[in-house]
Image (cartoon, rainbow, N blue to C red):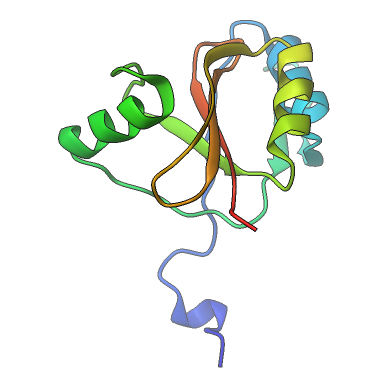
Length: 136
């Protein structure tokens, strides 16, 4: 039986990104990944959107594990303390859309030891993003 919301200690994960170029970053995630807007907050105090990213989990690594993952995905230690890892149904298509919308390729796609197909990119604000496609 799946847990009910009252049984869960956290109901939703939200990651808040502050962008120097708001329009560019929104375009990157909406057009690049095809994310849907669930809320828009236009106001005199500033702008914000909430994008639906599906199911969320939180990964916590020690420095050694972060270095291991960076080595596998990017060939060297390159990520900062926060990196998105987004599962996509078609890695090549998602990578092409993100590159067309301002992503920087950090390292070409690799097959990981656990069988996923991963690529490391950087968003227009410099945040490292791993796209991964589960093995068939």
